[in-house]
Length: 107
Length: 107
DNA sequence: AAAAAAAAGTTTGTACTACAAACCATACTG
DNA sequence: CAGTATGGTTTGTAGTACAAACTTTTTTTT
Image 1: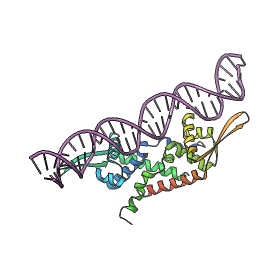
Image 2 (image 1 turned 60 degrees about the vertical axis):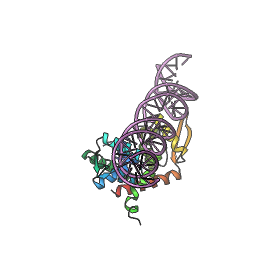
Image 3 (image 1 turned 90 degrees about the vertical axis):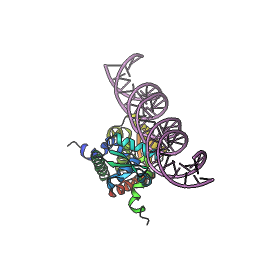
Image 4 (image 1 turned 180 degrees about the vertical axis):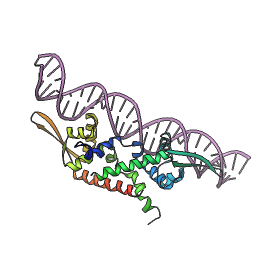
């Protein structure tokens, strides 16, 4: 191995970190969904303290990336949006955790 | 303690994470400066693989925040810019590390 | 039963930010 | 002395996070 690769690997790798996950608001969403397996819009809103508009935007981004699924149901008469991580989302989040943990360990 | 505070503390806290540090390019700069005590512009540029313009912008932000000092010297005839963390910068970076580690531990 | 307010989101407008291209100043080089 | 290299800074732009405003349906008030 070159003299730079091993020690600085985890530092330079940061430039390739998944920014869709790294963003704090979305990191909260990932954290909640990864421990809960599924959650609804209002629950996420309360747990994260994000506004509706902001949460909605982040959800759309994650859905477009294929990281979460969005199911729109009705509970009685009221709409109910259920979010869950996809396999891809779960895998990417685990990879993110690994990368950032390695970074912290390198300090 | 309330039922939410302890478990979700580290999750909701993410919304208050220091974004000046959290940004990947600057995280690289912090990582390098925290282990090296001082470094010059070109060294940082090579280690991080940031472009000159981009690195320059990030440095200015960190300097304005009081997280780093910027000393412009001459080595022989050539300009030489030396960067170092301030106490404040070091403290904030440690706080950041702690917060993100707690987050990872909570998953 | 009409009007008003609430619930559950989505869309739109804006202020900010990361980035590279273009620029600047000085120093070498053929 | 023209051209290129060195060591940066400034400027322009595309993208992003966020909240305000809007939409649609339902519930409550009068």
